[in-house]
Image (cartoon, rainbow, N blue to C red; front, side):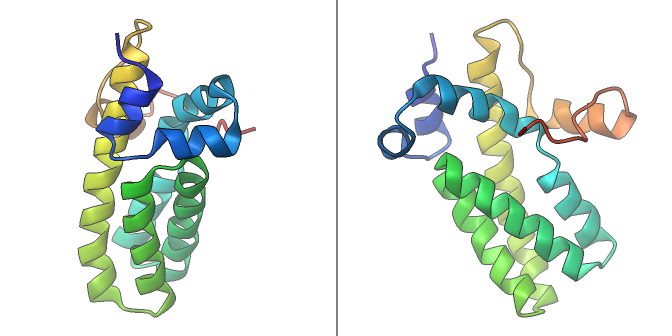
Length: 145
C-alpha cells in the first residue's frame, strides 16, 4: 500500500518537512489529492502556446506558490525558474523551462494518482489532460476552497 510519504518520495519531495510545517497528515492528504484538479498548469500551457507571457507569468507564479506550500520540491523549483524567466520576458528560456515544468508536473501528478489509486481511483497525468481536452470532467476549476 502506498503511503503519503512514499508518494512524496516518488515525486522527489520532502514529506517530513511538510508534515513538520503543516502538522496534520489529513490536511496534507486533502490538499495533495486536490492538486491534480488545480487549473494553474493548464492555464500556463494555454498562455504559453498563445504567446500571452503576462498571463503565463501569473499562472506559473500561482503554480509555484501552490507547490511551495505543498512541499513539491522538484516541481516548485522548475516553476520558480519559469516564473523568473517570464518575469524577465525571456521567451526562449521560458519555452525551454516549460518542458522541465511539464516533466516535473507529470511526475508529481502521476505519483499523486498512484497514491489516490490505492483508494480505487486513479489514472495518469495524460488521462487527466485527455479528460480536460474532451470537456468530460470538471477539473478545469480549482477545488482549493
